Image (cartoon, rainbow, N blue to C red; front, top):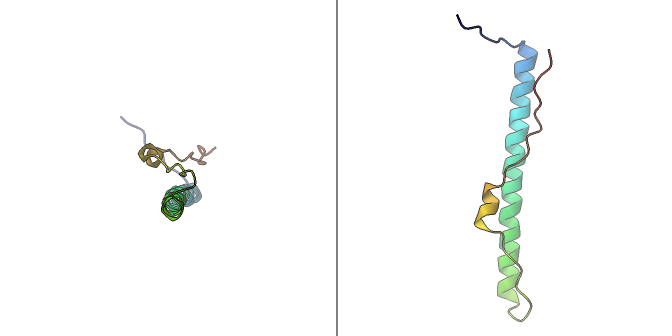
Length: 74
């Protein structure tokens, strides 16, 4: 027989709020990367004589956002 883990309603609400914050943090990181790439591209186009700004690589999109969620203590 399997035992099910049941969380208190407050714990479920805390976990949902933490998941929302983690998702928003991930969205913010992706937005900041996109803006940096746009700025770098604009600077590169605007001044060909200056050294080119290194654009973010494709692998930077795969960067993991550290999770701040901790296992809930009972």
